[in-house]
Structure formats: structure tokens, C-alpha cells
Amino acid sequence: MIEVKNVEKSFGESKVLKGISTVFETGKTNLIIGQSGSGKTVLLKSLLGIFTPDVGTISFDGRIYSDLTADEKRELRTEIGMVFQGSALFDSMTVEENVGFPLKMFTTKTPAEIKERVDFVIHRVNLIDANHKKPSEISGGMQKRVAIARAIVNNPKYLFCDEPNSGLDPKTAIVIDNLIQEITQEYNITTVVNTHDMNSVMEIGEKIIFLKNGILAWEGTKKDIFKTDNEAIVDFVYSSNLFKKIRKAQIKGDLSGD
Image (cartoon, rainbow, N blue to C red; front, side, top):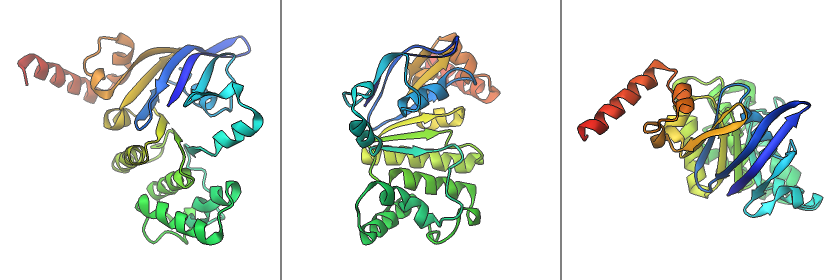
């Protein structure tokens, strides 16, 4: 569990986060959504320790990050996996080498142990016959699987994903969403996904927080979105005609007793 209490963050005279308080739950896919400039990227970077809040605290299963020693912060970072927006794979390395990189850098595992673990996670994300290929030799969807495999290879307690569906076609995006959710539940990880993809919200939004102008304007589940009368989240989600139709159908079904 990650708990955020009254977090504020400013850059110069611009206050980007304005008293954010929420809990990201263990074993669930927690989504941060909002328009560009809403503060969601700054919040994600604050969770990762890249930015230090001006006010408030962020705690990881009771450990307040700002109270930790340098050694304790390094230890915590070994418990974190990250899937970057552009996958951020090393072009000169094979899939196998990319996935194994964190183990070589941050553990004392033997080459045989690294090989065993790498093979396991590559198989877990359903990558077939890709171990010895370079990123340029595989599709965007496969690259994203490699990024997920690398993020979970060190058995993280916390998984952060920044726009994991960026650049993917809708069908592949759904596959990646489902894979992230499966891994979250299977390994009981606290997963936080920063996204603008409404399909992801409706597919895997077990806990959603919506930021608007640096304020937590709404939080709930994907089911709650269909029932809320919060104008901010309704306007954001249902700017798409498709979701307007879904909402109308849902409301009609509720009224008719279906």
C-alpha cells in the first residue's frame, strides 16, 4: 500500500499539486488520470522519489519516504519496478540482456540464477522465441512485454507504469492492460498506472484517482464512473461519444431494473 497525505508541490510560483491525499491499494491496479497539466506526471514522479513534495508525506507500507536514510531509500528502490512510456529498452542489448539488467546491477545472483529468473519472467509475459532478438527486431507490443518483464524480474512490491499503452493499437493495448492486471493480482503488487487512455480506465480501473488543476477531483472504481454525478470526471471521461452511449445505456439499464 502507498499512502499519500496532503502532498503539495510547486515549481517557482506555480503550485502543481494542491493537497493530494489518497491510498494506492495492494493487489489492485490504481490509475491516475487527468488532462495534460493536471499534475498526474508530477504526482507519479513524487511517488518515485524523483520530486520531493514541499508539503505532506508519501509512505510505502508505513515507511515514510522522507524519513528514510539514504541506505533505506536505496533498499526501497530495489522493491520498485518501472514501465516507462517508451519502454526505454537498451537498443544494443538482446531481450534477455534487457530483462536481466536489474538483476546484474542490484543483486548478487549467479549467472545461472539470473538466467533462470529471466527465462521465467519472459515466459510469464508470453514472449516466444524472442530471447536473443534486439528491440528493433520485435514489435511495439512485444517491446512493452519486455519492459514489463524487466520491471517484475526483481519481484517488486510496487509497480509503476507511465502511459503503458502509448503508441500501441487498441487490440494490443487491451492485451497489455490485462497483463498488467494479471501480474498485479498474481504477485499482490501495488500497481500505479499513469494514463490518459479511457479504454484502460474501463478495462482495469480497480481504483481511479482523477486530478484536475492539481486537485484530487474524484476517486472511485470503473463501476463508480457510471453512477457518479461529479461533473469534472463525467466531462473528462464522456468527452468521447462512445462513452456517452455507454453511460446512457448503463443509466437506462439501472432504471429498467436490468
